[in-house]
Image (cartoon, rainbow, N blue to C red; front, side, top):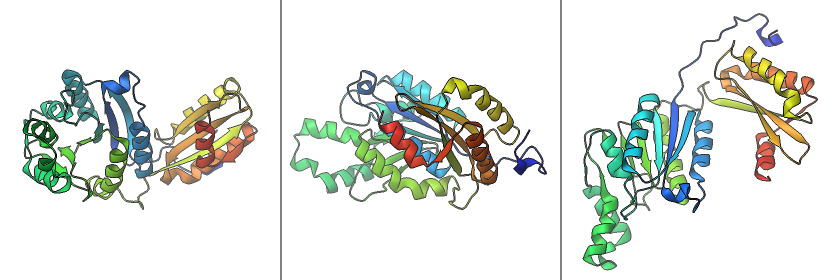
Length: 289
């Protein structure tokens, strides 16, 4: 039986097409455990806030063929792909050339980027000729009519390099990655026609329950099946909080389904002896593990 909200409604609601996103974390240092990736989590929250459907996060090493094949595959399936890492001055920083190869493009010294490097970092005063050559490897960017460099912060010379307004190459340093993405947000909204007022952004609700995942699994399975009659954008999830004596249920959907989602929350509270909690509370529980 559908919730009361749908008693007089047509079972299927037309769905607006959403922007499909993906994230590629590039770096052997992530795969061998030397550093912890935080950029993918930041990007996931970024996409969620903008109503972008993040469909995949991939972590790969500094291997050209692997980067090329990953970008080719993701480009065929997604609209907004961000890469993180591999754009420094050393031999294993091969992201620019690898992503360029994915589109059959060369890499060339970008004079605008080089000029910004000179004005902001003054490398000629600090580096010998050989070091300077390596430094300018970071200004050797994909080239072609479908390549665009976005300089979104005046204090940074590093651009967000875009190919076909589909793949966006960013540095892996979390402070840079986060600042550049935030500053790039107005451009993302313009490129993908995203508006805060549009109804395709997401809403998420959480229900805290003392029941175990095994106790609630049958109900959640049936609930997800019913939700698919409304939209395949509505996702039901469960999150165990071991040692805390409770679990949480996530109810995620589009803003245009908000009334329906709230009916689901009421139902879940009743069925699971639950209580509604905020997203901030759920994040606090998750981060404390």
